[in-house]
Image 1: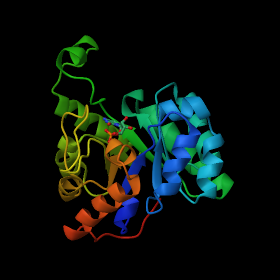
Image 2: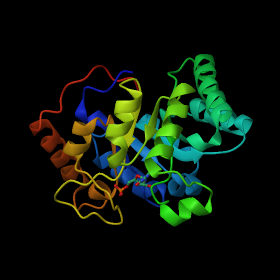
Image 3: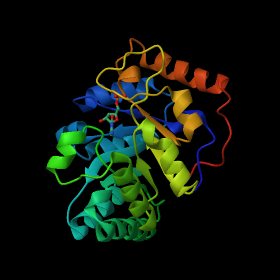
Image 4: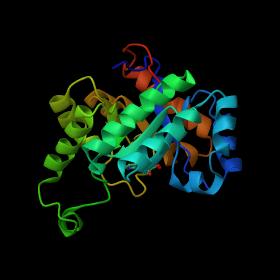
Length: 251
Ligand code: C5P
C-alpha cells in the first residue's frame, strides 16, 4: 500500500463546521493542507454541492459518512461517491463481509467506468464513544481489543484499504495486520492544544511513530486563532521529529 511522502498530505483536516461558507473559508486559508474530512453535519446540511468546489480548489475529499446498510445500498452509495470524485470514504466493518466486499467491488468498478482513481475505503471498527456497559447492552461482551482486531481483520480480508482507529489501537493493528493496511487516526492533539472531549489522545509525532499513516485533526486547527499557523506548526514539529520518509501518495 503506497503511503504519502509529503507530511502535509498525511494530515486530514476535519471540516467540522456547519455550512459551506465556514468550510471554504478554512479550505482557502489552509493552503498547505490537501485532504479535508467532510462528515455528517456538513454533508447533511450542504450535500454534494460541496464536492465540485473542493475539486476546483484542488483539494481531496474524505467523505466520512460511516456507511452501514444492506450491501446493495452501501455499494450504490460508494458508486455515488466515486462519481463525485471522493478520494476516501468510511464504512462500518460490522456491516459484514458481504457489505464490505460489495463496497470494495463497487469502488473499483465505478472508478474504472469513470476513468478515475479508486477511492480508499476505510473501515470503522468499534466507535470510540462506546465502552463497557454500552458495548454489553448491544451484545458485545469480548474485550474491546479483540473486537477491534476481529473487525479490522475482516475488513482487510474483504479488500478494504484501511481502518479508522483510536491512537491506542495503532500498534496492535499494525502488528497483527501488517504494512498493507492504512491506519487513519483521530484523537490527535499537539502538546500545545486542549484535549476537548477526546479522552485517549496522542500527539501527531507519537501517532506517526506508532505507525499511523494519516492523522485526522479538527479543533486544534479549525478553532485556532490562525488555522494556517496551527497547521504549519504541526507540520514543523513533525518535520523536526524526522517523519519524512515513505513512498508515493496513492490517494
Ligand atoms: O476536533 P477533533 O480533532 O477532535 O476532531 C476529530 C474528528 O475525527 C472529528 O470529525 C470526529 O468526529 C472524528 N472521529 C473521532 N473519533 C473517532 C472517529 C472519528 O474523533 N473514533
